Image (tube, rainbow, N blue to C red; front, side, top):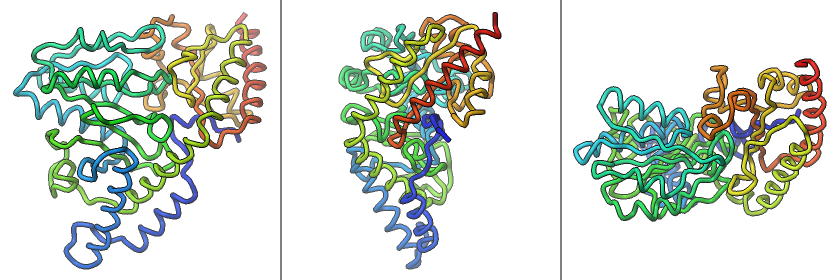
Length: 379
């Protein structure tokens, strides 16, 4: 099996599974309970928070554990916008954000009368600093721009945007860093809210974290026991938190020794795809992450090509996993100015640190044969 859908989810590390099992078995008590078992579980939770914060470059009190990227984005976007609505009701985002961000903003617009500016990316999927600054109004209270695009891999100039927004203290800056955590470092100095998800860096599904800079206010989306600094009620899972902290540590360490290999593999794929006449590459060669490569075969159906690869036990994806079952053209590629035929035939390949060179050689060979067959049938 050749698994090339790591942007949808990654295989958990064995060490992460072991950590989860050990903590879930030994420290199963509710961390909020007053007895000694609860205190032991709370210690494990605190240690996981401390480790996660250190790896992110944050303080312990700035890490809120969530169930994953979708919840983190909902909490960051809705929570910060509603908490700041007395300052204004204008939000800036881009047309190529993850659905959990775009749908959260849509709800704010439809149900709470927020006004939204959707920034258009350039042909490389880039949102420029100038476009963000031009969109700022006196009533702007939130800017939400993702770090790495989940479909084409473009890396946004987050640090520069954050530096610019530092001059606007009434504006909260949220970054969806789900695709970058453990793969592309991101300093948090000028970021107010930042979302990560454990299963994207070899942790377990159901765990994530939201970085919330000290002093930032949120309206909680979940009410009840006031856990997680009163920002996210619900019984915490020490096992999930501990296993995610371990996954983040392992992935961060592997980044240091594997980043050159991943970038080499990315360019190997780009060169191989460029040699196929009917293939159009959508991922920019520069200013893009090493683990995401997006391409199209205009005139063919992406799902048919995906099934042909699957028959050879090669697993890729079409659009974002969160929207792929809708069977529609990639909104990201359309926003980048790509044609309908390109947007409807896109395939995403996403690597991990475990991807081997021979896997990519096999993928390119099978892909080329499959594409030739499809093109011949389409004539």
